[in-house]
Image 1 (cartoon, rainbow, N blue to C red):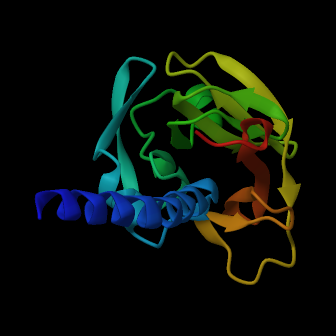
Image 2 (tube, helix red, strand yellow):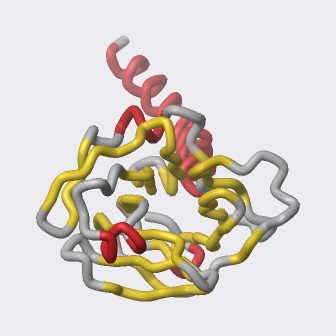
Length: 179
């Protein structure tokens, strides 16, 4: 009798395993936008940037579930304690757990300061406040409901748009893959 149970158990594992693997792979391969409030719930109440802590605005946060194990989170921050030159560029905090591309520029996992600046530009800085890159932003006059910060799907599959009001930049997983 124990041998029969062992054979049945092995058969069940063999029959169920391919379905389980393919379902897991399918669900973890597609990036999805997090629902309203999800990003704010996992972000810390304050973040470190350029030698200071700043409170995040959880109500003005957004995120992407890049894979089963990796998130991209962003939130507007209260920059009142920073100099005006920093405030002009540092508007939001961005955390990514997987490599991404913003406007074609690669960005490794980590925490960054970012912001939409004059001249239709978007700047990304390391947490020391050093500029890493600047890309052109696009104004979307047709956006029906602009909010201070949001992420929406882009027309290209696997790409997203990070919006501040009606201005946006394209975000995608680095080289089209996620972790």
